[in-house]
Image 1 (spheres, rainbow, N blue to C red):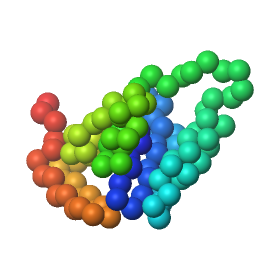
Image 2 (cartoon, helix red, strand yellow):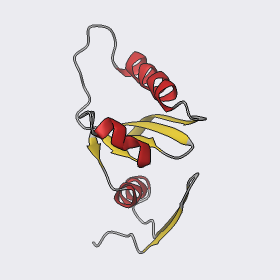
Image 3 (cartoon, rainbow, N blue to C red):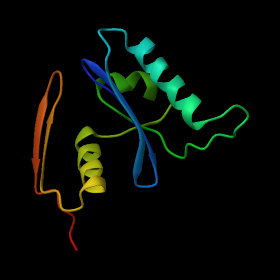
Length: 115
């Protein structure tokens, strides 16, 4: 998952329902450099030399992610949907989410899944 926001870049790698890699970095306008560094770190940790690709899905969110989506590097995902799905992955009984970004803030309530 890659989230390119107003002030930061976030990169996460999930293995099943576990988060095995997570980086949050302020980009100070240098989005490409910060993202490239994060992706190199992911590659060195999870894709040893000679290994075949193991990434099944790529999700992009945030305003800056449109740049990657236009090049076919992943699927653009609605931020609200990503927040809800991520919260429910971590805490199945989550009822509310507060997300504060560099440019926006969100409060989402009633996000429990039905039984």
